[in-house]
Image 1: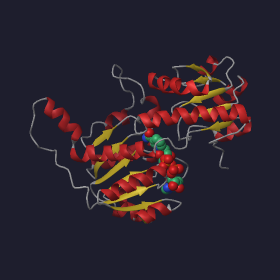
Image 2: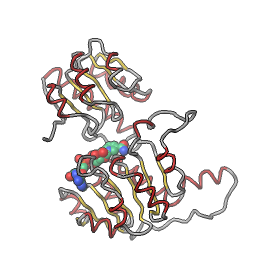
Image 3: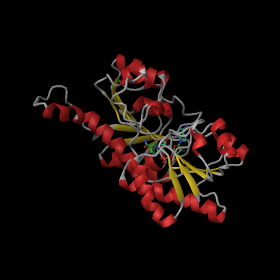
Image 4: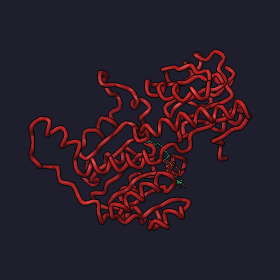
Length: 332
Ligand code: NAD
């Protein structure tokens, strides 16, 4: 199938080109993001492959439809950036990669927690500058702590298991309980109880209407002093301005973020020679107890291979069998 690949980096092209040796699709790689202007790059493609920071609103979907696009193949698990109602109305199919490596994301959440807690990022810089002092490097034992996991699907389940391995007590909140988690020793509690009891909170639920700003001023007020919060899920789960207020008051102990509310304007690009215009983000990065990575939790070799395999196979199934495999539909 002829595919327009938007928003590609060298690593995307490397992994997709290798995997396409098996699939034989006709791929055209574009560097620009997908938006209302770049739709015009399409000539005779039938499918578009897009990433999480591409624009797939009603306007763009309509323009893609006019260009003859039938299939939107997301090379991501998340699909909150797609106007699914518009896609349905236009008769366009949307497919995704539901699971590529839940281990990659769960392990990155642990990496954020461990790095922040033991100040590894600060120690790295200090030692290189010949500063071998231990001031301000003290962490806490993870063993014995109560960890609250919000969302116990594929990633949350693995994260819980790792934390149980550390000797933590794991409590969880999810709209749907996961029996494997219960078997592993996870205790489900209300969201309120999770906020009140957890020393460490890790977010693993999707972004939707009910989870937007799940961590807001009211939620933060219920949490223990010096709580550690880790978010590898979606930026809009946290009200960043509310978090900054509480950080300034010294109430959050550690905040580890792989995602940020307005990350579309920043992440995945080298902006080291630019002036960052986002004052909220800039303020966030001034706190010594905040660590931000730029949506890299998924980024392992194993995950990239799986993303390429599943994406190209989703497209193959649509082309040859008319099947919408790993489709996402409008819930309403
Ligand atoms: P999943 O669908 O397997 O699990 C999500 C869980 O969240 C489900 O158990 C679901 O019942 C639960 N949930 C839904 N609404 C909820 C609510 N209101 N409150 C509490 N729980 C709720 O998804 P997954 O594969 O585990 O991925 C989780 C999230 O991780 C994704 O939605 C995505 O946003 C994020 N993610 C991030 C990266 C990254 O690189 N940072 C990569 C992949 C996924």
